[in-house]
Image 1 (tube, rainbow, N blue to C red):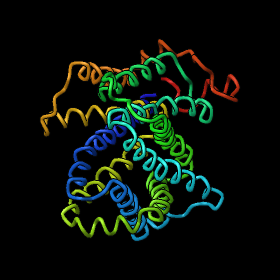
Image 2 (cartoon, helix red, strand yellow):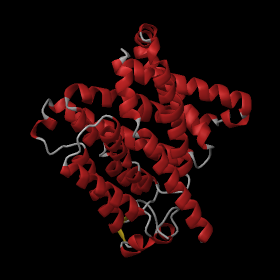
Image 3 (cartoon, one colour):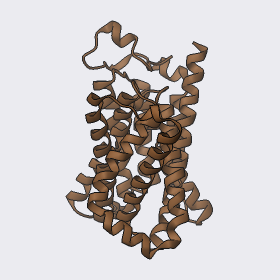
Image 4 (tube, rainbow, N blue to C red):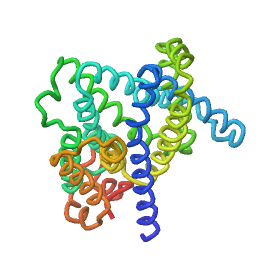
Length: 323
């Protein structure tokens, strides 16, 4: 039991580390856009470069990790198309339609989608404490992104729909990942999700990305950080941590990303933090702490919504259940 709890604690720590690295994306992306690299070029170069580097490294040092079964190829294709290509595109479209703050709020509906999908496909229980943590997370993210400002959601219905789509596709990264990790190494999962995500992006924006990079050679250091740290490093940590924790817990914990982004903006860019944002930060951190307290799960240990298509005994022994 102690070993299981220790492994789970390490999983939480790895997911937290991944979210912290993702929290630096805003500052790095701002530098990239300032150097002349377009948003489409940035996401295309990020996915394609990370896929190429990881596939090359695995081919040289760990070729066995590149072997996958033919029947699993559709899983990886769907993984890449939905949770890499579609997510990047939907999030970009949302930013075009709405404010950045509104786009962030809609993207962080992801934990709600993950909690429901995990209950349906992974037999993860929707406990009262998990639902409470989910509610605190959604409220906290909305406050951090300043969704309380009247202008935050101005725009078209299309923007709201693409924003919810970005939340869904972002959340499915955890669901696809959990299924793939049952059979494969985290680096195998990451390599093929990036590969099948990068291919459609290259088809759509490959030429523009190449031209944009040629015009902006000064963007290379920031792009290297984006690829090595916030993509390979962060996703590697996240998938490794996801092996030990429930998908819904990982999705909720990853919402510390906007908290880190807000704090870095305050510290490095001297962006003001309003009182509701500070309260939102406390809500997100509180939900993260709640997930790590065994007593919190014990208090809500009875499933609020039972796992779909699972018998009583199977539900009781579901992997990742509360300690």
